[in-house]
Image (cartoon, rainbow, N blue to C red):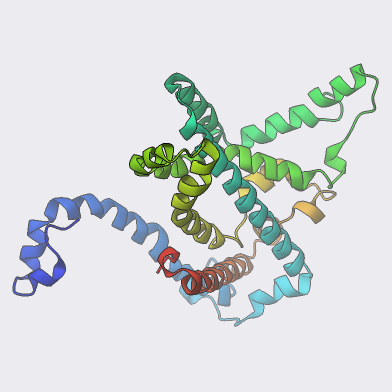
Length: 314
């Protein structure tokens, strides 16, 4: 943090303030530049959502078409199905993911063996670094109808083969499992760090009062995690209309039989963009996602602020 509060610098020049904190500001510079270059400068491309983009005319020279690009989603009849799938999948990812992340963080915090804890954390963290391309290859080799591991085992046991690539029913559960598995280690680290920072004197006092391990978890650990849980929940809800493109596209590809239960906004737009090369339509969809995500986080933040102001983002 700065050496002094900003209010104490009213009689000093801004230049002297910057000079005294030059090291901290220099450390902050890369993050500021990264945010400007990759978050704020690209916002100029929002104008493409209202234009008929032509490569020869460029972004600002292309003709205006108003809301025409937004009509594609409505006319296609896909707006509600893909939006519904995106919301439901993200809600499932948030609920199931947070539950297991918190659960494993609490379990690891109670483990006393340091070697086992390190091995468990490393094992949980490993899937985070695996590409969805690799995960898709693993899933294909397990569930492939002709040569998959699962079907070979079923045949050896005298059972019939199963073809999940022709059946959309198992895919919601499979996608939720894979998303939870891949994000478990990374997500649990956040909660484990919070648990580590809990004042140990509270646990010692609970031991003196005769509290068992379950009472300490439900009366001390979980209540201490609530502020972090609410912040992580709000941040996740801010992306509820954006799907994990790598997960859905790499595992499902363009399998028409699976699309009714696996198609989300991101994959739908990608396929439409690849077939029509309509950049204006893709930009309109991206703007639609951003606006509804922004509205969603405003609504939930306002609700949380009314219930418990300390847990709100602002």
